[in-house]
Amino acid sequence: MVLPHNKDMENIEHIKRLNDQLIEKRLVWTKSDYALLSGKGTVHGRMLGFLSTGAANREKLWKQGRIIFGYGYKTYTDRDFTRPYLVWVLFSPMSIFETEPQRYEKVFASLQPLISQEKGPFTNRKLTYALTSPLTEAKYYQIPEQFTDGKLIYVSAMYVYPDIHDQIVLGIIPIIIAPDISKEIMPVPEAFLSNQFDHKMNI
Image (cartoon, rainbow, N blue to C red; front, side, top):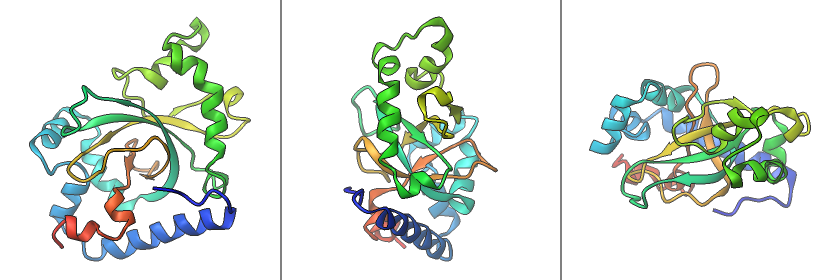
């Protein structure tokens, strides 16, 4: 998906349009639809949900969350894209990133030395693990301001569910968050963005 980086107003309108669609779809989504959205549509997804402490909150994301821009920079999978896999995402609740999501690229560049070596200096060891290790499954790990120009930015590892998500293209992507009720984040399905999601869910 190509996002409208060239004009700040277009970025804001794009996010507003997605959130308006989300509000409309909530009027018709059923319990089964929310289960599918939260990754429970396959055996792999249900097993992952059973083993994950945050599974119950993924449905709450779709019931109460909002869509923002995030920045996906790394995936972890055994190359079997038929099963759920992890994607690491930088994201912020600050409105400036809805206007200028390309700001994430500068933050990513400042973190690249830690991400590429996967071993940071002792003082940055926890940050390096959060940015790279599949064992941590980071959730709302705050990036130190020295890397963010003083902006509030988090990193989380989110699951992608192939039965509802197309293969993630790294870079600026729409995600759904609800920090007051859940430490989970999820990608917004490509079919949702193209208004084809209702067909995928057989609504």
